[in-house]
Length: 408
Image 1 (tube, rainbow, N blue to C red):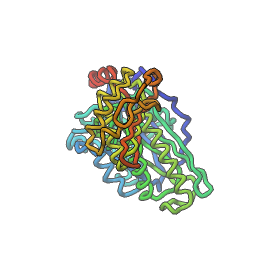
Image 2: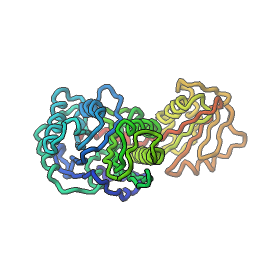
Image 3: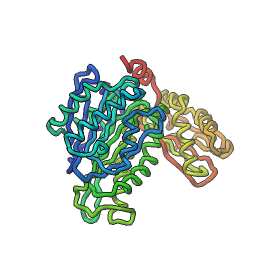
Image 4: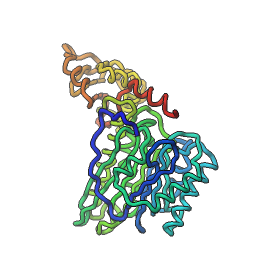
C-alpha cells in the first residue's frame, strides 16, 4: 500500500470478530515488497456464500471459477493474492487457481468448489505456482490475525485500509457484519479493481443472500466510478456463517429480513464510498445527484456520464464551477434531456435554472464549496420523478503519476 495517504482517508473502524470466520495472513513473495501478500479466511461448515463479479469479458480465472462456484451456495475458505492479478494468463493462470483450491480443500476436507480465490495486481503475468503453494501452506498454519492486518495484506495502490461494519436485530438476536475492501483505480460500474469481502454471523439462505447482495451492489458498487475502467478481477463476496443463533432467513417475509437487508446495504454503501475516497490521486469526493429523470436507470446513466467526464473531473480538481461542462456531459449521455428544462447546482446553490444562468448568480459561495474535500453536484432534468446518486472523485496529476509508474 502507498505511503502517501489520500486526503480523503478515514480511520479503519474497530471491526468485530465474526464467529466462524478466522483470518490469517502470509507472505507468498508475489512481488519484491517487504510485506504479507496473501490473506486466508477459514470459514466454518455451513457458511452461505453470495457474490457479484466484474462484467469485463477478459476476466481472470479467479472470477470465472468464483462465478461458477458461488451457485452451489456454500463456502469454507477465501484466499486473496495481492501483487499479481493472474488475469489474461490462459491455462497457466487457471492451473494456479485450481492448485490453490485443491490445496486448501485438502487441508479442510471440503470440496474444492467451496474455496474462493481472488487476485489483484499486474495483468498478464501468471501466478507463480511454486510461490502460491508455499504461501498458502504458510497461511494455513499461521496464527489468526485482525481484520486490519487482513485488509492491509490485500491492498495494492490503496493508500489506506478500508473496512465497514453494521449490526441488525434478527428475530431477537444481534447479527454483525464486518467487511473489508481494496480498490483505488480501474474503478467503474459493472464492478469497479475492487475486491470486497463481507462476513456476517447471520443465518441466511444463500439464494436470498445472493438476492440481497445483488440489489445492494446495484445501488452502491455499480454507482461509483474513479476512471471509467472496469477491471478484469472485480469481486464482492458475502459469507454468512450462521453462528448468531437467529432463525435462518430464507425470504423477505422472515423475521428480521428487512433489518438485515438494510445493514447489508449500509455496509456496501460504506465500502463503495471508501473506494472512491481512495481514488488514485483524488483530492475531492464528489456526489452527483440527478433528479427529474424519466427513470432511475436513466438518471444513473446521466450521473455516470457526468462522473466519468475528464473535463468535469478536472474542473472540480481546479475548483472551477464550470457548469457548462456538466451541460456537455448531460447532453452526451444518450438519455432523455431537454436543454431548456435543465438546472444545475453546486453545493446546494443553483448556478443554472431551466436552461439559463441564474440571474445575479453569486459565485463566491460556490467557489468556497469547491475548495472543500466533499463536493455535491445536483442536476435536475425537469422531465419526470425519478432520480439517482452516483459517486466519483476529481482527476489530478496524481492519477497519471500512479498509473505511469504502476509496473515499475
